[in-house]
Image 1 (tube, rainbow, N blue to C red):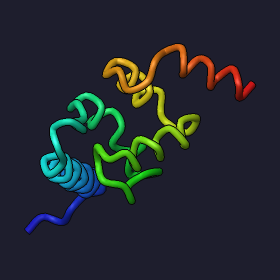
Image 2: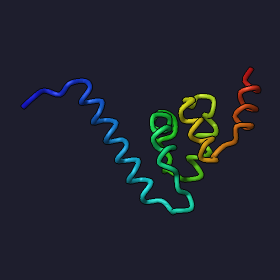
Image 3: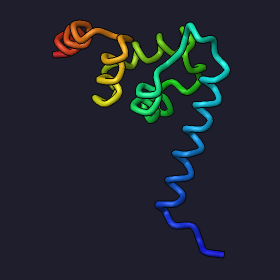
Image 4: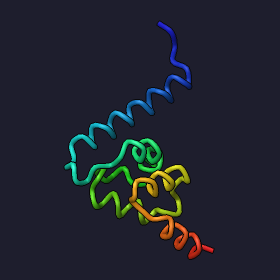
Length: 98
């Protein structure tokens, strides 16, 4: 049996997290659906900041909003594209931090 490399361990971790996130999303109501693009782009942000909340829940949306300045640009771009937040709101929050 071949020993696991750091790359294969990291791949398995990401795959496991993605499957867990997918299973969680499958169990929520369609009205609270989250696009695949958002799930993929925001996975690390979700795991880092808001994983205590169920995907698609109002609590998750509140958490992601509260940690907004800490979110990756990839996640923010996906949220804008999905209509979860407007570009104007992102710009307003960025200006408020200056």
